[in-house]
Length: 326
Image 1: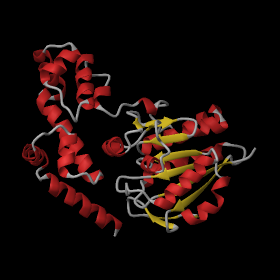
Image 2: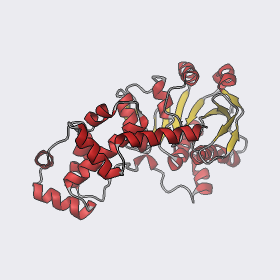
Image 3: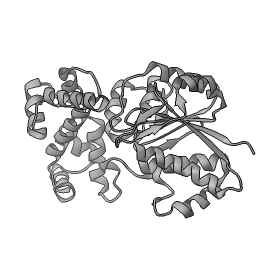
Image 4: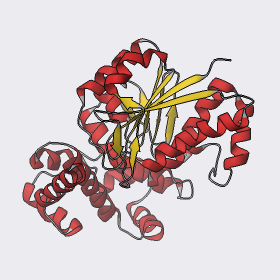
């Protein structure tokens, strides 16, 4: 039986725990099989030594330049992202991903590795999973990509996940596809202390998906989430959810310890903060994208919520990324 070849592309500051979770699944698969059934290689972008998010350097098997000469031997290529990974396009990586896609292989992304796939135009009109902190970026820069609310999405030619736990679960789904469910059951017996559910992709990422909340409240939360740029009034929210405004306010106070208006404002401001740190959009455009018609009102609300102006928040983010990359 031919081995399934998996390649991991390590971006600077990649999540070490997400990467090792995915790799652990493959290593354990080989341990529980009569003979190794998976082979794996690692590649840095421009250097074979790549710094992880926790400051530990990983010596990869090669770089993108060396991968370009033998990527045709791989069945799966996975881009490893992380909280502090660059979200800008890296042309050599886009070239590799596009070339690999043409040969029909499966492309994956850990944490925010899906951003690299989106830059290569390989997620258009497809669903993907990505860390919640990067939802705003994906929706703003890649509107043709359907961002999932689930922790992982595995399709015929794509596999994406949001973080460490889902990285392991995503890899188990791929192992089941290539080598069957029996080997996955054996892996789960060994790693059972780390695997809480066989359906990690069903774990909700947003408050509106919390099944413990009353249905009317979840409907209001979903409406808020879908109407950031043009906020609905409280009357409109209540009408669409078929509850009275007084009942809606009671639900928010009882379950979220907040008022509907305050929760909605904080939701829009959190979205604004993500756009400020993850895109190059002007502060004016960010304000408009988050439903603010007055820049001064936006500045005041943002400062009240985060203790700094939008401009200072962006400057701090830029300074942090610069320090991380140096």
